[in-house]
Length: 401
Image 1 (spheres, helix red, strand yellow):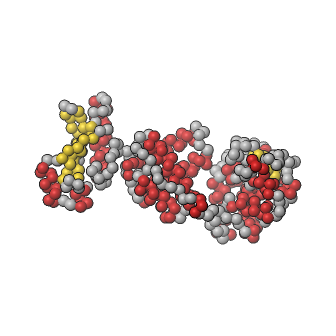
Image 2: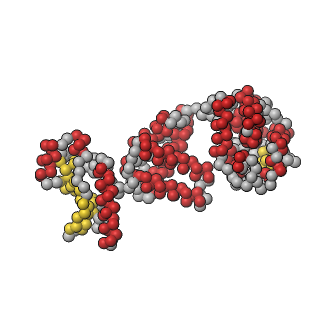
């Protein structure tokens, strides 16, 4: 869409210079109207230009829209959008050059439809999809209630920086969370540029907080507290305790736990095999399950369920439905108040704690790395083969939990 402008008749300029000033003059305007001339059709309106001290005419050509009926509908929509924008204080002589007046909320809806389609088509994992939805929900809330914007052009670099400050400072999140939101804004900005809603990414030049400048939010949990967690769960949340055991002793990630089936346990060998399609690194891997954990799973009746059932389904019991990994965090949150857990003690901290206790028990670090399936496993493989049988030392271990 092309735009032309010209000065208003002298009567407008004189009146505005003599009678209006400051904000009042900056938001003065006339309502947009359609015009037809021999050279084409356009929408015309006047807005006060503070640099010239008078109203100036703004013209937006509409003859690029083919077909009389389509053009008339486009003109009606354009007039409405321009009128709404002018009422909200927009001034074409102050704002940056705008080729289209896209409504921010409509673009957010289109992006939501985009990520829905990406998930349905299998391009996004469920945890990725849920993360994007969560980020978009917070951004939408910010754009509606905290610092409202109406049009896409208002979503600029300054706005992104202020939103990240809101996430980091006002919402009291950690540096890593702030960096995650920045990555999401980059993806969202890229979508808007690709679709033509913006000419450039507003996130350009916004740097993440360096990992060297912040500490890990998650910390190891003291052995005494780990024991209290075990005692509390045995009385109040028995199936969640099994999840704690698998994270603490077997280092199976929460997302992987939601995909585990009863058939992945082998009672004879004392192992769990995480299928390639379930593991984070897309490799089939086997880890040792301590005798203590196997006995507890037997007590819960896990192995009485159908072999195809998920170990953790509805209410964290075996069943046919896959659950969201967020459920584990919800159960963990219920422990915080009665056990007075510190903020830095996350559910995932049980994995860090379990690894630390195994190393402190003088168990060979190479065995711990094998059990934990760390990224350094490739180096470990130079000295040892994949484990197919249970490690006897891990099998007999009985830690604080």
